Length: 404
Ligand code: SF4
Image 1 (cartoon, protein in one colour):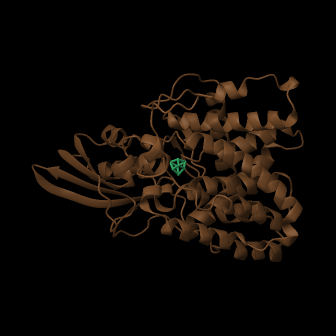
Image 2 (image 1 turned 135 degrees about the horizontal axis):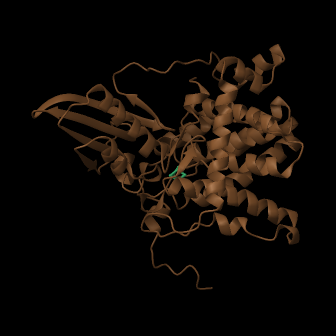
Image 3 (image 1 turned 45 degrees about the vertical axis):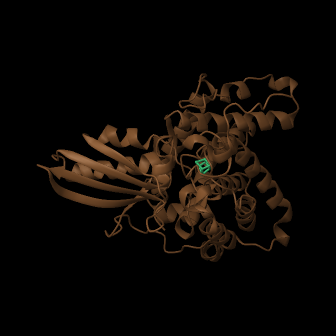
């Protein structure tokens, strides 16, 4: 597995695979050959079908100019779901031609070229890692620090700061999100209520939701967020951690950092053994993964046993199996923003259930990750970030949803 440093990335929303990945690709090309006259970029599959709503064209043109972007709008099953073909010309002569895959979470692969990032984890299933931790009497976070080496705690501190900033920005920013849906930002309204006169369950629900909305609305408006594991699912993990830190005086910032290490390990296992990309495996791979990371982080904060941490993450994925990716008009707004809040609440529930029931569990985390991936591969392309099915297909602007 790669370092968790490549999982958590601070950057601009709204999409790790549709904005961060393509931006990285064109910047690498520009660095390699800075003096070209003209570039032609062709986007395929999900990148072509939802690239407008995800601001892919703007991001590319902002870095690589002059350039022409073509959206190839028929599904090409021979290409990766997020493919860019980049061509560069000098004096009308083709100087460079590269096919790039944006594989999720902002990571890119140049087709036919060797992987530049090093695989630093020798173990790549939860079972192997669990056995190692048991045999060597180390916790999951200690295992992560051991593999990641010097400076990793500081890296996670920066990640946590960026997560907190996106929450604070989101709950204090009113207005409308970009795009034709004209969605009102709702985080400040969710956050602003009389907590003293509310029952505890409602308070928890509203606060956790407000934090998840805050980060997701920052993402949808092109603000700075942390991929956890992706832009679309960036609100789940920070919402749970921020709420728990505020609510429980026994939780320290240091414990939050340790729980981020464990969440990163879970995200890394999914990324390595399956996918964290909605275009590859549907929303179960994005929101389901984020929920598993948050559930494991929550379990770590409460000092749950290794088995219970695993079970919390497993429950979180299991009950997102089959979840499709169907962003309306190609914008990371509906159903994405609300879905982050629901997944954050579900992560807390998953942890509670794991605490009570871990002795009787039958499904391992590794098994559910495999199941999620196969389910995603079997899913029709209409439901994998192409905006051709689901809510994206049935949404009508004039549907009267408020008639009752
Ligand atoms: S529906 Fe899920 S996977 Fe698809 S863009 Fe939204 S958050 Fe990402």
